[in-house]
Image (cartoon, rainbow, N blue to C red; front, side):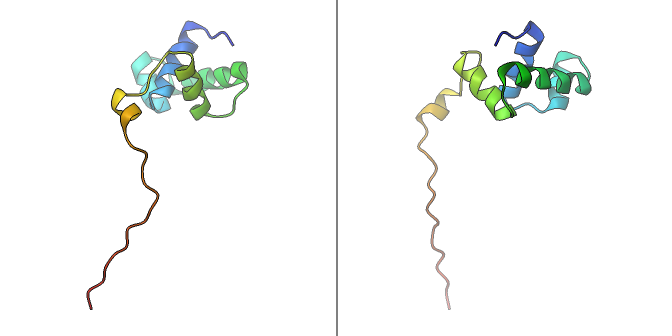
Length: 86
């Protein structure tokens, strides 16, 4: 489960919601290299998605959700009725 420093940097940026091109620009590496690093992270952690990278990065304490997200009420799934005026 050990990642290199570069893999950890990429995992953190993935967890923060950055796209490959944004990660590449931030770390001054190619977009292709970012893809290779993400593939390596998935392989080492035996996971299949970027979302799982974010979850594990958070679980390891590398990133935290914004404080307001922790206290925000869950979004309602109820649909509001629309009144039509005839």
